[in-house]
Amino acid sequence: MERYLKFTLLFLFYGLFTMMGNAQDRMTDRLEESPRHHEWVEISAGDKTLKGFLVFPEISEKAKTVIVIHENRGLTDWVRNFADQLAEKGFIAFAPDLLSDFSEEYTGTADFPSSDDARNALYELDEKLVTSYLHNSFNYLKKLAAGNGEVAVVGFCWGGSQSFRYATNNENLSEVLVFYGTGPKEAIDYAKIEAPVYGFYGGNDQRVNATIEASKEAMNEYQHIYDVQVYEGAGHAYMRSGDDPTGQEANIGARNKSWERMLRILK
Image (cartoon, rainbow, N blue to C red; front, top):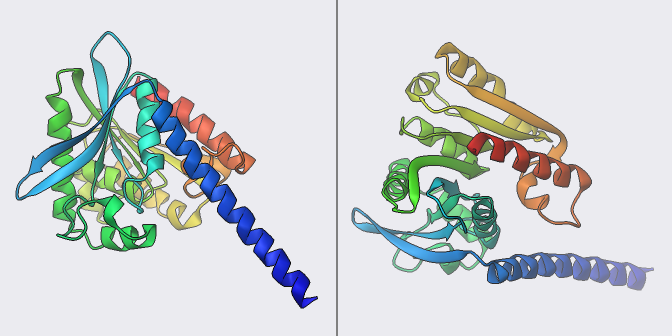
Protein backbone atom coordinates (compact mmCIF):
# COMPACT_ATOMS: atom_id res chain seq x y z
CA MET A 1 0.00 0.00 0.00
CA GLU A 2 2.78 2.42 0.95
CA ARG A 3 4.61 1.63 -2.27
CA TYR A 4 1.42 2.26 -4.23
CA LEU A 5 0.92 5.66 -2.55
CA LYS A 6 4.50 6.68 -3.31
CA PHE A 7 4.03 5.69 -6.96
CA THR A 8 0.76 7.64 -7.14
CA LEU A 9 2.33 10.76 -5.66
CA LEU A 10 5.28 10.54 -8.01
CA PHE A 11 2.90 10.16 -10.93
CA LEU A 12 0.88 13.21 -9.85
CA PHE A 13 3.98 15.35 -9.36
CA TYR A 14 5.31 14.24 -12.73
CA GLY A 15 2.02 15.15 -14.37
CA LEU A 16 1.96 18.56 -12.69
CA PHE A 17 5.51 19.43 -13.71
CA THR A 18 4.85 18.17 -17.23
CA MET A 19 1.80 20.40 -17.56
CA MET A 20 3.74 23.39 -16.22
CA GLY A 21 6.56 22.69 -18.63
CA ASN A 22 4.17 22.33 -21.55
CA ALA A 23 2.48 25.63 -20.68
CA GLN A 24 5.85 27.40 -20.52
CA ASP A 25 6.94 25.84 -23.81
CA ARG A 26 3.67 26.90 -25.42
CA MET A 27 4.12 30.52 -24.32
CA THR A 28 7.75 30.61 -25.43
CA ASP A 29 6.91 29.08 -28.81
CA ARG A 30 4.05 31.52 -29.33
CA LEU A 31 6.34 34.48 -28.71
CA GLU A 32 9.08 33.12 -30.95
CA GLU A 33 6.63 32.39 -33.75
CA SER A 34 4.87 35.75 -33.58
CA PRO A 35 5.24 37.77 -36.81
CA ARG A 36 4.97 41.06 -34.90
CA HIS A 37 7.88 43.33 -34.05
CA HIS A 38 9.10 42.87 -30.46
CA GLU A 39 11.77 44.89 -28.74
CA TRP A 40 13.17 45.50 -25.28
CA VAL A 41 13.42 49.19 -24.47
CA GLU A 42 15.12 51.14 -21.71
CA ILE A 43 13.66 54.38 -20.39
CA SER A 44 15.48 56.80 -18.11
CA ALA A 45 13.59 57.16 -14.83
CA GLY A 46 15.55 59.52 -12.62
CA ASP A 47 18.47 57.61 -11.17
CA LYS A 48 17.03 54.31 -12.41
CA THR A 49 16.46 52.69 -15.78
CA LEU A 50 13.05 51.21 -16.54
CA LYS A 51 13.09 48.21 -18.85
CA GLY A 52 10.06 46.98 -20.72
CA PHE A 53 8.73 44.81 -23.53
CA LEU A 54 7.25 46.65 -26.52
CA VAL A 55 5.14 45.09 -29.29
CA PHE A 56 3.90 46.75 -32.48
CA PRO A 57 0.85 45.68 -34.50
CA GLU A 58 1.02 45.00 -38.22
CA ILE A 59 -1.13 47.89 -39.41
CA SER A 60 -0.72 50.90 -41.73
CA GLU A 61 -2.06 53.63 -39.42
CA LYS A 62 -1.16 55.06 -36.03
CA ALA A 63 -2.33 52.86 -33.16
CA LYS A 64 -3.69 53.31 -29.67
CA THR A 65 -1.14 52.41 -27.01
CA VAL A 66 -1.64 50.31 -23.88
CA ILE A 67 0.44 49.98 -20.72
CA VAL A 68 0.25 46.37 -19.51
CA ILE A 69 0.92 46.07 -15.75
CA HIS A 70 2.06 42.61 -14.75
CA GLU A 71 0.90 40.33 -11.96
CA ASN A 72 2.68 39.98 -8.62
CA ARG A 73 5.26 37.59 -10.13
CA GLY A 74 6.79 40.29 -12.29
CA LEU A 75 7.20 40.50 -16.05
CA THR A 76 6.63 36.86 -17.02
CA ASP A 77 6.32 35.21 -20.42
CA TRP A 78 2.56 35.14 -19.99
CA VAL A 79 2.47 38.95 -19.66
CA ARG A 80 4.66 39.27 -22.74
CA ASN A 81 2.29 36.93 -24.57
CA PHE A 82 -0.65 39.08 -23.54
CA ALA A 83 1.12 42.16 -24.93
CA ASP A 84 1.73 40.30 -28.17
CA GLN A 85 -1.94 39.27 -28.37
CA LEU A 86 -2.98 42.90 -27.84
CA ALA A 87 -0.72 43.93 -30.70
CA GLU A 88 -2.32 41.23 -32.84
CA LYS A 89 -5.60 43.10 -32.33
CA GLY A 90 -4.12 46.39 -33.54
CA PHE A 91 -2.69 48.06 -30.41
CA ILE A 92 0.84 49.05 -29.43
CA ALA A 93 1.47 47.27 -26.12
CA PHE A 94 4.17 48.11 -23.60
CA ALA A 95 4.75 45.89 -20.57
CA PRO A 96 7.12 47.63 -18.13
CA ASP A 97 9.16 45.51 -15.74
CA LEU A 98 8.38 47.17 -12.42
CA LEU A 99 11.24 45.24 -10.83
CA SER A 100 13.71 47.13 -13.03
CA ASP A 101 16.82 48.25 -11.15
CA PHE A 102 15.54 46.66 -7.95
CA SER A 103 19.10 46.25 -6.70
CA GLU A 104 22.64 45.74 -7.95
CA GLU A 105 22.03 41.98 -7.88
CA TYR A 106 18.52 41.98 -9.31
CA THR A 107 18.09 44.32 -12.27
CA GLY A 108 14.77 42.87 -13.39
CA THR A 109 12.29 40.01 -13.01
CA ALA A 110 14.46 37.53 -14.87
CA ASP A 111 17.27 37.91 -12.33
CA PHE A 112 15.29 36.56 -9.39
CA PRO A 113 15.87 32.89 -8.49
CA SER A 114 12.15 32.11 -8.41
CA SER A 115 8.74 33.69 -8.97
CA ASP A 116 8.28 33.68 -5.18
CA ASP A 117 11.40 35.82 -4.81
CA ALA A 118 10.12 38.20 -7.48
CA ARG A 119 6.77 38.43 -5.70
CA ASN A 120 8.41 39.20 -2.35
CA ALA A 121 10.52 41.92 -3.94
CA LEU A 122 7.50 43.43 -5.65
CA TYR A 123 5.78 44.00 -2.31
CA GLU A 124 8.85 45.89 -1.12
CA LEU A 125 8.51 48.53 -3.84
CA ASP A 126 7.76 52.08 -2.82
CA GLU A 127 4.47 53.32 -4.32
CA LYS A 128 6.20 56.49 -5.49
CA LEU A 129 8.66 54.42 -7.53
CA VAL A 130 5.83 52.43 -9.12
CA THR A 131 4.04 55.66 -10.02
CA SER A 132 7.26 57.10 -11.44
CA TYR A 133 7.77 54.02 -13.61
CA LEU A 134 4.18 54.21 -14.87
CA HIS A 135 4.53 57.95 -15.59
CA ASN A 136 7.66 57.21 -17.59
CA SER A 137 5.82 54.46 -19.47
CA PHE A 138 2.94 56.84 -20.21
CA ASN A 139 5.22 59.63 -21.43
CA TYR A 140 7.16 57.21 -23.61
CA LEU A 141 3.99 55.93 -25.30
CA LYS A 142 2.47 59.40 -25.57
CA LYS A 143 5.41 60.52 -27.70
CA LEU A 144 5.81 57.31 -29.68
CA ALA A 145 5.75 58.14 -33.39
CA ALA A 146 3.66 55.08 -34.30
CA GLY A 147 1.11 55.85 -31.57
CA ASN A 148 -2.00 57.98 -31.94
CA GLY A 149 -1.51 59.80 -28.62
CA GLU A 150 -4.05 57.77 -26.65
CA VAL A 151 -2.76 55.72 -23.73
CA ALA A 152 -4.85 53.14 -21.85
CA VAL A 153 -3.74 50.95 -18.97
CA VAL A 154 -4.51 47.28 -18.29
CA GLY A 155 -3.42 45.45 -15.15
CA PHE A 156 -3.77 42.00 -13.62
CA CYS A 157 -3.97 40.97 -9.93
CA TRP A 158 -1.36 43.21 -8.23
CA GLY A 159 -1.16 45.02 -11.54
CA GLY A 160 -4.94 45.43 -11.55
CA SER A 161 -4.73 47.24 -8.23
CA GLN A 162 -1.88 49.34 -9.60
CA SER A 163 -3.87 50.27 -12.71
CA PHE A 164 -6.74 51.47 -10.48
CA ARG A 165 -4.28 53.38 -8.29
CA TYR A 166 -2.53 54.90 -11.30
CA ALA A 167 -5.86 56.33 -12.43
CA THR A 168 -5.68 58.53 -9.31
CA ASN A 169 -2.29 59.84 -10.49
CA ASN A 170 -2.93 60.44 -14.19
CA GLU A 171 -6.03 62.24 -15.45
CA ASN A 172 -4.99 61.78 -19.10
CA LEU A 173 -5.48 58.03 -19.42
CA SER A 174 -8.05 57.08 -22.05
CA GLU A 175 -9.32 53.97 -20.20
CA VAL A 176 -8.39 51.95 -17.15
CA LEU A 177 -8.99 48.19 -17.19
CA VAL A 178 -8.74 46.44 -13.84
CA PHE A 179 -8.50 42.65 -13.88
CA TYR A 180 -9.22 41.19 -10.42
CA GLY A 181 -7.51 44.07 -8.63
CA THR A 182 -8.70 46.12 -5.68
CA GLY A 183 -9.43 49.85 -5.71
CA PRO A 184 -7.76 52.60 -3.65
CA LYS A 185 -8.28 52.22 0.09
CA GLU A 186 -9.04 55.89 0.81
CA ALA A 187 -12.36 57.15 -0.55
CA ILE A 188 -10.93 60.63 -1.19
CA ASP A 189 -8.45 59.17 -3.69
CA TYR A 190 -11.30 58.35 -6.06
CA ALA A 191 -11.96 62.06 -6.50
CA LYS A 192 -8.78 62.32 -8.59
CA ILE A 193 -9.92 59.81 -11.21
CA GLU A 194 -10.93 61.15 -14.63
CA ALA A 195 -10.70 58.11 -16.92
CA PRO A 196 -13.48 55.52 -17.09
CA VAL A 197 -12.62 52.40 -15.09
CA TYR A 198 -13.71 48.93 -16.20
CA GLY A 199 -13.54 46.01 -13.77
CA PHE A 200 -13.13 42.35 -14.68
CA TYR A 201 -13.60 39.84 -11.85
CA GLY A 202 -13.92 36.10 -11.36
CA GLY A 203 -16.97 34.97 -9.40
CA ASN A 204 -14.88 32.68 -7.19
CA ASP A 205 -12.56 35.40 -5.91
CA GLN A 206 -14.22 36.79 -2.80
CA ARG A 207 -10.97 38.21 -1.40
CA VAL A 208 -11.02 40.75 -4.22
CA ASN A 209 -14.75 40.90 -4.87
CA ALA A 210 -15.47 41.93 -1.28
CA THR A 211 -13.92 45.31 -2.12
CA ILE A 212 -16.00 46.03 -5.24
CA GLU A 213 -18.98 47.58 -3.47
CA ALA A 214 -16.83 50.15 -1.65
CA SER A 215 -15.20 51.13 -4.94
CA LYS A 216 -18.62 51.45 -6.57
CA GLU A 217 -19.85 53.73 -3.81
CA ALA A 218 -16.76 55.93 -4.00
CA MET A 219 -16.88 56.14 -7.80
CA ASN A 220 -20.61 56.95 -7.72
CA GLU A 221 -20.02 59.66 -5.14
CA TYR A 222 -17.74 61.47 -7.57
CA GLN A 223 -19.87 60.58 -10.60
CA HIS A 224 -17.11 58.56 -12.23
CA ILE A 225 -17.57 55.61 -14.57
CA TYR A 226 -16.90 52.24 -12.93
CA ASP A 227 -18.34 49.47 -15.10
CA VAL A 228 -18.00 46.05 -13.48
CA GLN A 229 -18.43 42.56 -14.90
CA VAL A 230 -18.17 39.43 -12.73
CA TYR A 231 -17.68 36.12 -14.54
CA GLU A 232 -19.38 33.43 -12.52
CA GLY A 233 -17.41 30.25 -11.91
CA ALA A 234 -14.07 31.83 -12.82
CA GLY A 235 -11.32 32.13 -10.24
CA HIS A 236 -8.59 34.64 -9.53
CA ALA A 237 -6.09 35.09 -12.38
CA TYR A 238 -8.53 33.53 -14.85
CA MET A 239 -6.97 35.46 -17.76
CA ARG A 240 -3.75 33.52 -17.29
CA SER A 241 -5.23 30.13 -16.39
CA GLY A 242 -7.91 30.53 -19.08
CA ASP A 243 -5.20 31.05 -21.67
CA ASP A 244 -4.34 27.36 -21.25
CA PRO A 245 -6.53 25.22 -23.56
CA THR A 246 -6.38 22.41 -20.99
CA GLY A 247 -7.56 24.71 -18.17
CA GLN A 248 -10.92 24.84 -16.43
CA GLU A 249 -13.88 25.56 -18.68
CA ALA A 250 -15.14 28.45 -16.51
CA ASN A 251 -11.75 30.21 -16.67
CA ILE A 252 -11.45 29.69 -20.42
CA GLY A 253 -14.96 31.05 -20.95
CA ALA A 254 -14.31 34.07 -18.73
CA ARG A 255 -11.03 34.75 -20.47
CA ASN A 256 -12.66 34.66 -23.93
CA LYS A 257 -15.57 36.88 -22.88
CA SER A 258 -13.16 39.30 -21.22
CA TRP A 259 -11.14 39.59 -24.41
CA GLU A 260 -14.29 40.46 -26.36
CA ARG A 261 -15.31 43.07 -23.79
CA MET A 262 -11.80 44.50 -23.53
CA LEU A 263 -11.53 44.99 -27.28
CA ARG A 264 -14.92 46.71 -27.42
CA ILE A 265 -13.77 49.11 -24.69
CA LEU A 266 -10.36 49.86 -26.18
CA LYS A 267 -11.74 50.38 -29.68
